[in-house]
Length: 204
Image (cartoon, rainbow, N blue to C red; front, side, top):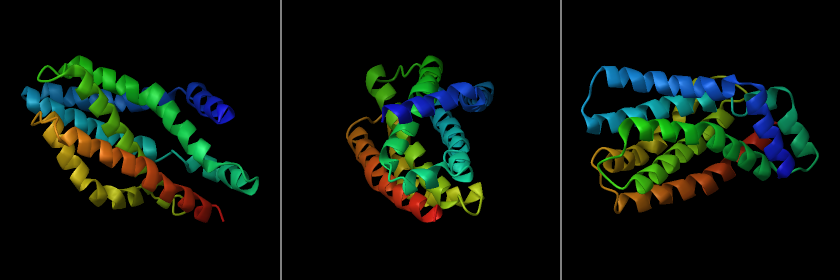
């Protein structure tokens, strides 16, 4: 696990675009919505749209390089755990990309219509859930090298999008935060379980 974490953090630090590119995309999209001067509630919606697009862009390359250079296949052949591999990728992205994105959203929106801690937590959960689902699309599209295949999982996110809208636009934390957590648990377990098997199939 420690080696996997060091590897993933090193990959992000050694390739700075892995940090500044998603944050730049997120910031630019967010800035566009601010220039359009929507009211505060729609600013929350704009932060979700910016997050949605940014996480989708990030997910395109989640497994691509490791698949092309044979790293995933090597891990499987050596009997090394893919669980720690996925976990390390998530922790590195959470620490270096999603936490800064949450900070940007918090600084711009302020979450003044509700408890800041709960909204910040919900925002991180939202980003993490998007990350897991779009990684599923990324794993599916590895062989065909077509990131548009990742769009196939968007129908699975329709209930999730409704939950996010009720939390950040309608400011209804309860019971929607509990449902959001349930969606996160589902994505962190079942979706990642599916990703593990898809990666093994794709690497054969």
